[in-house]
Amino acid sequence: IDKHEIKNPDEILLKIEACGVCHSQLHGIEGDWKELGIPPTLPTVPGHEVVGRVVEIGNNVSKFKVGDRAGITPLLESCLECEYCLEGKEYLCESNVVTGESLRGGYSEYITVSEKFATKVPDTMKSEYAAPLFCAGITAYKAVKAAEPRPNKKIGIFGIGGVGHMAIQFAKVEGCNVVGVSRSKKHLDVAKKLGASNVITFEKNQEEFLKNLKEKIGLLDAAIVFAPSEKVTDTAIKAIKKGGLVVIATVGDIPNFPTFEEKTIKGTLIGSRKDMEEVIRISHENNLSVVYETYPLEEANEVLLKLKNSEIEARAVLVP
Image (cartoon, rainbow, N blue to C red):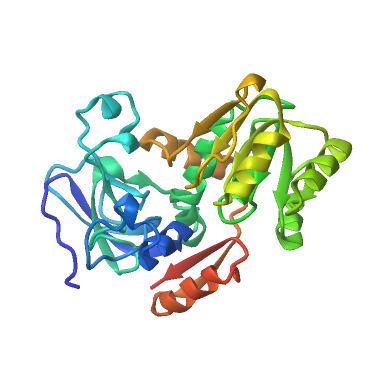
């Protein structure tokens, strides 16, 4: 494709230094989410967690100067005028534009974005580290926020992958008692390393899993689901106390919901521009770990195959 050019006076042109490889992009590429309208156009350039250096600015840009580093979340644009935008929930805007679902995606060398939708990246933060924060990081942060964290609250994280491993850390920053849940021993080891108070192996036999949970840890105050599985969602709902809270941060149906137990189910979707600034600040100040491995941009197809085959420990990052 042609190199992107600044078309609006509030835009910046970024030379991309790193782009995370997200599982949701794999679904878009393979056509799994056609019913959701993803991707809306073809051809498309994937990649929606982007960090780069500003190489050119529009005439009205005041937030950035040439040489600054900036990142872009999946939210590339919104109208900034509707009720959602005015409430600070611009990610819910009906006319939003998603990074990586048009020709403006991160699996490339350059990208343009309005300065309003770009976030500054500290000079001391590596681009490869920062890139996953712009999707996995903000998704994890927002999900933890939705779980209403407080000191000693027992929160189960179901799925310790590219997003879940960050959610553990954001919940720990809030003083929560974090329980990591995964099928994979490798992921449970990651959860322990990152500060989970307890870990437990997810089992297909739901009764056995719930029995082990009650005996070892006790029922949870809240749960966050990152694994796109009805079985996992159902188990998470049953793993929380009466009156507890389940946050679903993935695509999937709710197979069963016991209304008389006064449980609450919340959905969550990335976050606002203000949330993104908080993600960068908290990660920087607390030196949070981002588990990633880097690959050259030319190997994007091979990396997506690795991701599909669960051969990526947490997050893959493409670098030009």
